[in-house]
Image 1 (cartoon, helix red, strand yellow):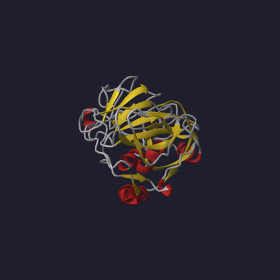
Image 2: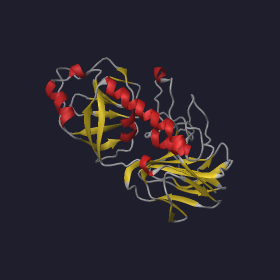
Image 3: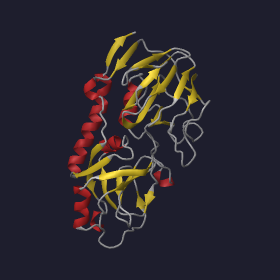
Image 4: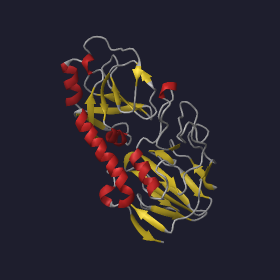
Length: 317
């Protein structure tokens, strides 16, 4: 069913879900939402399956006209959303009428927002996912970002008799200074003690070369023991590569599947979502944790996601 007409596509708006798993061996990136927590909550707020596809907006959101009565939710970075020019709340179910216009204001904090539609966005399922991989030109809506006059469809438009909201204590707050917890390795032995200390003791700023594939960071140079190349091996989101110039690269959701720079560390799962809301100019500090501590943080993160469905507050329409 036709749900939205795109009046203005915004800076970079794509269809994303939780990602495309099982195809790294064929060179296919995971892709999916840069902030999977916010996408998951957006789906829960309209009683979708957590794996349903949403729109991911970047910094400047789109302008969309509703083509029918629909229910949506907007989560992620504080993007000051509006319906017909009136500001509406994030992190809760919103009911739209045919002809309503949804738009986004200035991104107050964070970098990306997520718009879910009751029933999930209907684009072809490709390799088990509806996520867009723009560099490869596949997934989502014709493998590209949205453009003016696109029509967005939903899979199932049955309306809810209740609206949901996320309790304030669970609403994420994004800042321009972040701490990312990391486990050192798998090639941390390729860096001097001075280099490791520099990585863990100094802030790094995200420069303009930052997108869904990864962020280049500016800061203290990380010193290698000798060479700065390895035989290419697997890369996953959250890995921190350090090329010859000693300036780290933080790998994100659309990362290539292999790489030949040594990896000094890997960011823990929950903090990859946090970093998905980072933007050029933001500052990251890296904090070392043990494998056991990383596992504990990951368990806490997934327990929170599991508990959110029961934590949602509801009110009758």
